[in-house]
Length: 299
Image 1: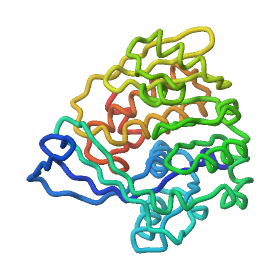
Image 2: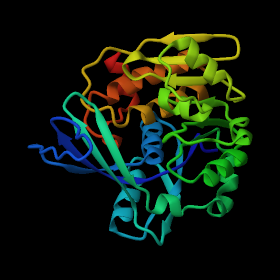
Image 3: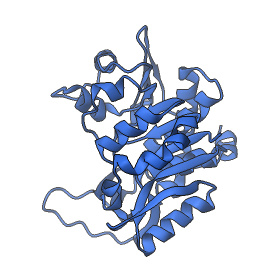
Image 4: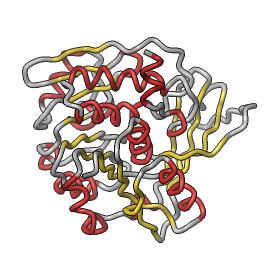
């Protein structure tokens, strides 16, 4: 039995270091060289789970091109099963990541093969998804693919609703753990503003109708765990951030990892905070993901 199946996106990231993020219409020149890296929320989560020691399979799509071959090879080298990574008639997804020295980032994505993937493509892999101990899914693939994957799942379902867009009620009702950030939570609930107050965030989280807890990631402020009965703010670990690009993906993988070991939702979130804290001290997304022993050494 596979520990974790990830249904989601695979991108080639082009990372561009800049002194500041550009405003609309502004050109910002950077002196540092750009670089290419593996990315996509799905692929990042798959690699993060594999580096924590989990047996992982990836379901997604890349282009029938050299970049798709390279990206699939990256995952395979990490021990991620890639037989369910399909070759599309569209190019491999690309993400342009603009990142500053203090870790702030802005990302523009050309979805390519990720949006070619359809719910029908999941049919041969329904048994793989059903028998996995956990399913991780995000929203860089179509809403239909997300709904199909969640409906097929037989184990723990962790949904990271990023990037922000509505999720249908039937899908939310099958989610065991929802992991949005503040903005994604506001978008899911139709809130016109993004609340900063924990009580307001908890009220929005409880209005969604998931069958389990909601863990709201708060960046440098930690994470808010919300259940029907209570809410609990967990502090972040103080670190010197270099690049926050892959922190949310690492958090989701680490949360699932701990829950599969029987941890409570609070302890799972604490573990996820620890793993994400190591991630932000390194440049890149997939490349920054730590292995379990590195997290334990970091404390």
